[in-house]
Image (spheres, rainbow, N blue to C red):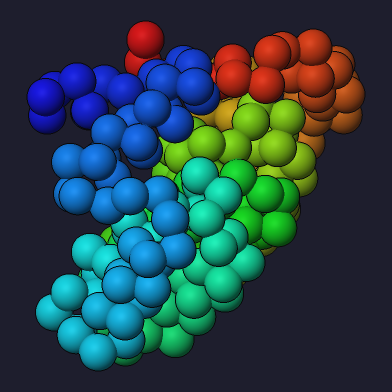
Amino acid sequence: MSQLLQRAQFSKDLRVRLAHVDMSLALQGFHENQLAVDSLMNRASTDPQYRAWAVFYLGMLAARGVDYDRIHQALLNYARNDKDPSVRQWAVEGLRFLAKDQVLDELFTSFTEDPSMKVRDRAGCNVADCGIFTRKQRMRMVPKLIDLAADSKTSAQMRSWAFLALQEITDANAPADALAWNRWFADHGAEKMAEFERLEWWQVRGDE
């Protein structure tokens, strides 16, 4: 079962990734309802040892449309403000299931501003590839990633992650150079976005 879940969460088919959400919630004994949200919210607020685990599964519940707005605000608050980097990391992991453009922007903020490089790493992965965002949604992040790579204040590690994210989002094989990526985007960005707009909503980059 663990191998099946691992494969499902990185599938090329968002329907399979959402099935992974359903299976994960069921295995933990959570019904996709308000009672589960209330229980996890309470545990997250009262039990620091349980908080990281709770925020991850709250993200899954939001993915299935259960109390989306409340969960979104809670996860964003934990991702921004919790003193424990592990909680911020798992809040970022929970946000990857929320599937809206605004959430990608919020993940990008964690990617560029969180004090912990572990949190930044996971936020960057969720911008680029993980979770249930469409390819068209992720393509909108390309200019931000190019700007990040071009900024002289960006660290070598962050620049490397920005180039990796650009490759994963676009499938392009441009060199690790901000000017080259600017040229690529000027020449091919619109056509790549049009390509992604023609895809079925569930078609994404994945392992299988």
